[in-house]
Length: 123
Image 1 (cartoon, rainbow, N blue to C red):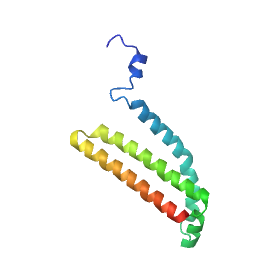
Image 2: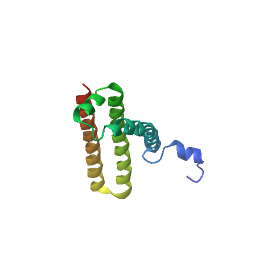
Image 3: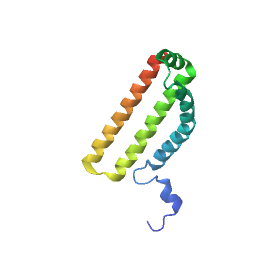
Image 4: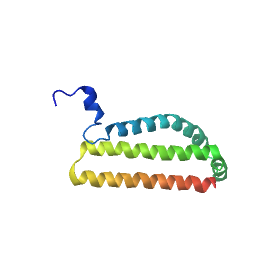
């Protein structure tokens, strides 16, 4: 082991062989959210406090509906990956497994509910 170069150590991607993939997934979703969140704020923000019919009319249009759907999907994927890292760092054993499974189920459920709601309004 003492004769391994830094490149040789990095090419194995760490002990789990998924470190680089997880890092890039978090980086790509962060950049996506960097673009999506301001767009979402500028489409959703003006609708706060408006009458129900006006909000439905706004989100029945394609652009706001797509922005809201993408923000929900990418945000929940980013949430799932971030919470998984936090759980892996601070828990161990059976508790870790249960918490990871619960958070994955929660994030997929929230994404499904959000996307269903947007689709229901848009269609």
